[in-house]
Image (cartoon, rainbow, N blue to C red; front, side, top):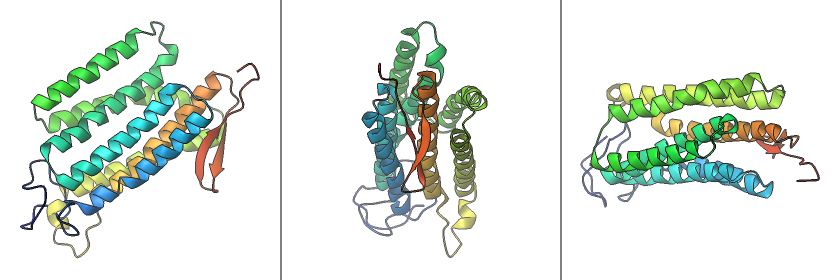
Length: 254
């Protein structure tokens, strides 16, 4: 929400969300939308450490790094509300979904070099196109299609998983994305009404927090499924009594 206040970054040139701008600092346009990405960074760092410590395949380290990159890009975008920074947020969103598609479908893909090559070229082409052309609803539809491509494979992993704790991770994934999507839609389509409220529920910031947990739950579930495929005898355990992560016991030959 644009306000007539002094700002370090100049006039807003990107999509403006339902939060009053520069209310806490002249350097941060949307304060809550900026700091709400911190949980995603912390969770992705925790997941990265676990993936490296237990020597999971490099794809999972890259996946956690992509979550961190996306969260940091989102922080920069919401702090500045500039078009270039918005593109720096949206392009990694697409790259991340391409990475999820690779992790989900690659175990059964017979031509192993074709999938990563195609996804890499697709991601590079999108980055170039997105830097030249500004499109709003088109980006959202494109991103939604990529998300929908992941659902059949996630469902297949879910029904073939017998571990109750792993299934709970999948349910947490579904719950966080459902509630988060509701918060995003509510903030976007009812902004004019919210602007008259005494207290802004910060729906977009809640979306960031929930999607940070959503990404972490998805990654942890996929790590469990991949460890099962590799015969690593995975178990879902908890850190500090509440944060689930995957612990594996590899055969001695590995």
